[in-house]
Image 1 (cartoon, rainbow, N blue to C red):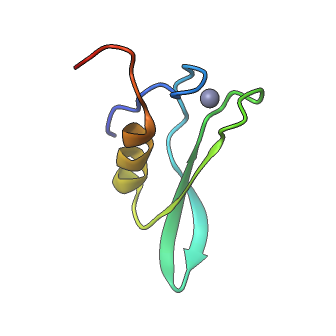
Image 2 (image 1 turned 135 degrees about the vertical axis):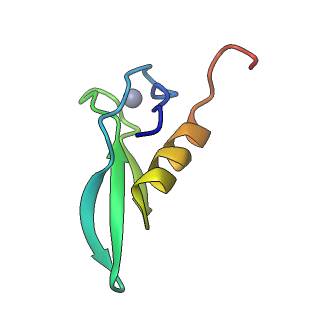
Length: 66
Ligand SMILES: [Zn+2]
């Protein structure tokens, strides 16, 4: 499993993407911030688990400048 970056809004590390059903026959995955107080929870649906993590990570905006 790829590393998951902390949520850009609250800093909580999300759980692994989970199977969220099918869209037009394609298995989709969803990744969420697990902080119930965080308003930016759902990232979206993606065709595979790694893409879901990549999408999540690119939403992250770490404060360091790496
Ligand atoms: Zn969050």
